[in-house]
Length: 312
Image (cartoon, rainbow, N blue to C red; front, side, top):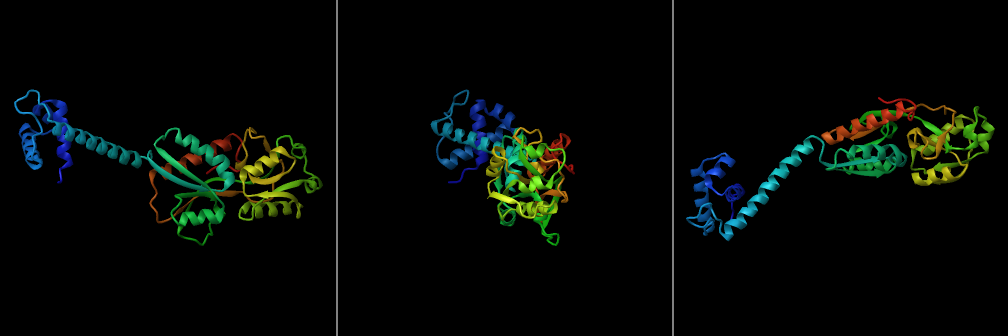
């Protein structure tokens, strides 16, 4: 048997109000219209909804139970409308983000934390991975946005959209009190003798590190360890005299992570970190709001001395 949910909502208002007149005023209809609705509903279900000749109206057990269902329907309808409104304003939903491990470890996690403080009804799923895995997930619609170097995308590819977020550069990193990082001048022989931590061949950082070290006169660095784990790499250089090459965003600008960068500027170009999306997918308010938030977060880091090349 089908019962119009609107009639159950109206029944709930009648029970709460106690009279048809008060209920009609609250609903915005007439008393005769509500009376007809009750008569039709009672005829449909074959049982009375109110005790006869009682003032205020006294619901029967059936009327009381159906009124409860009406309240539940009203609550669900109002919640649905709220969800739609929150979603349209970017305050509801799930955002699926992907980024390289070092970007997830630092800048992305900071941006997500500050973003969610004002959006408690939003959930963000963050997937750390390397270029191939991230782009595959993006095409499979498992990610809404990939945040990473623009070089992840071939300039000839037209089905992806890149929105620049900020500029960054690669730097030599070691523990905060590393003797080489305290030197005011660069001595290539000292750096040739240093021991390095490398990166997995799945990471573009591996080729970046090899190229940049070669350009400063270290074609064959002594690599003691290489890892896919961002945390393992950071912990190794934090607890030893090993060095590595990392994006500048991978270390805390205030040194609170116990890491520091060398004063030497690697002879490699700065690069754009971009938000990468599939061109024909509709961008939600939640996605666009997070991208703007990430731009602001990176700009704040730059102004405080964290990112070397500035933000867009």
